[in-house]
Amino acid sequence: MTLDTRTKIRDRRQAATWRAAHPGKVVFTNGVFDLLHPGHVVLLEAARNEGDGLVVGVNTDASVRRMGKGPDRPIISEQARARVVAAFEAVNCVVLFDEDTPLELIQTLEPDVLVKGGDYSRATTVGADVVEARGGRVRHVELVHGFSTTSIVERLRAPS
Image 1 (cartoon, rainbow, N blue to C red):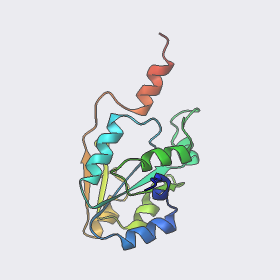
Image 2: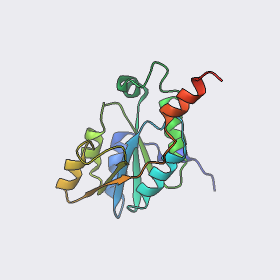
Image 3: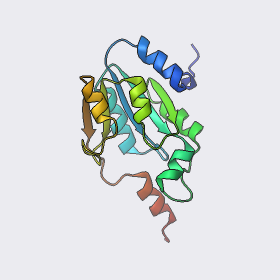
Image 4: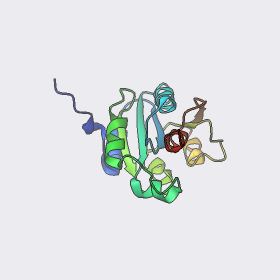
């Protein structure tokens, strides 16, 4: 058997086809996933535990730059970030999205569960209303304190 997790990376059309054919409850989460850390692992595992399949939306480089995270972000290219996220056993499908929010992707994929980190609330979770209107639900996962890509980058840049 040859393992190639690149097959989990799909464009929007391919992801919609996967979603339509996937039996069971589909979960969606999204993020930049620039420098992976334990907080990302906890989020992806918790998201996968909410259903039978997990789709992860990954921001493109252009959308990350528009977020204002800093002139050197993202550190890792979109294709590399998608490949690393796809390597997680918990992840079934990875889709790059270029919009400022994942709303269009959520509308296309119609997930049963939307999962975000605990730094979001119901009111700030993009797509929560769309998922709930279809009978789905929204879950917020507690953050792993001490870990964020921004804080890791700041520590690396700080003088010794």
